[in-house]
Length: 164
Image (cartoon, rainbow, N blue to C red; front, top):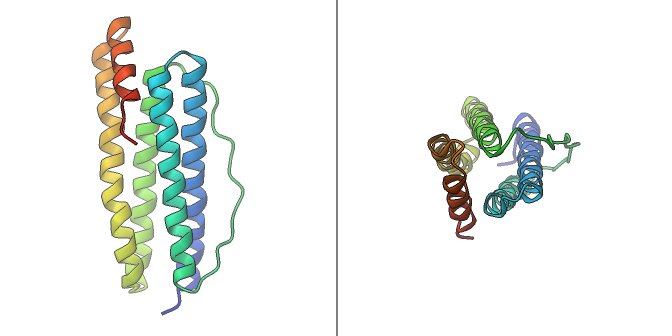
């Protein structure tokens, strides 16, 4: 079964969105590096890599289904933040937005009775649960740490220990 044009266009849009997510996380990593948070920078760089992998998973799927990938322009992400808590709050909000995008894609696939696409998107739905949980946990830990510099630095070290 060939991928329908409506879903192909929607998945191409999501490829762009995933690439933007990676770009956004890379901008956050750059901010963390410049502000002496090497652990958070590593966490964000790893997250950027994951988003690239998500884009490529969608990219490959379009071709697997006989479709055509059409790459779109990626917006410039923000470069300045109010601090580490702001970064992770924005990351969490972004992951919530991505969850909505994936859910919309799934709904479009369901509307077209495209069970193969629904099956592929199930992985993304499960992944978004993890993505939101990870970001929200860091937000909560940063809120607990507050302005206590030793606690923030300890958390930065913990973020840098993220397994690859």
